[in-house]
Length: 131
Image (cartoon, rainbow, N blue to C red; front, side, top):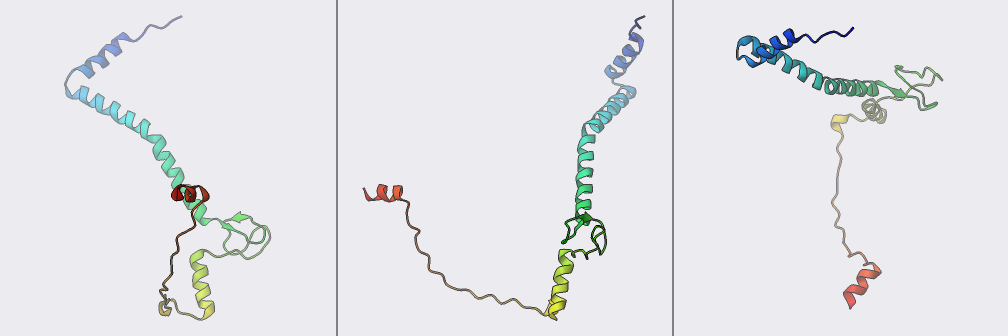
């Protein structure tokens, strides 16, 4: 058996939308907010997923011996080899290994004059310029 459409409620909703009263404005604001939420929800979920992936990727460490990626702190769970350090820790460790203090290290740069020569022209351009 077919149900009839709820014409009464459709008419009440239409009157609320058409009347300039506070109830009509409240209904329009509510519908607008729900629409914006539904439209922006995929974008917000995508942004949250991307941030989560970046955080996850920054915490992964790859074993130099077997290539297994894991969240282990110091040793590989697959082969037991010590895991590589992060880039900042590796630079600090290399400076400490050399006995150098990072605040006392100076890099000297010397400027050297270089003579620039014109590159040879391709055969097609050389023929065009001669004739």
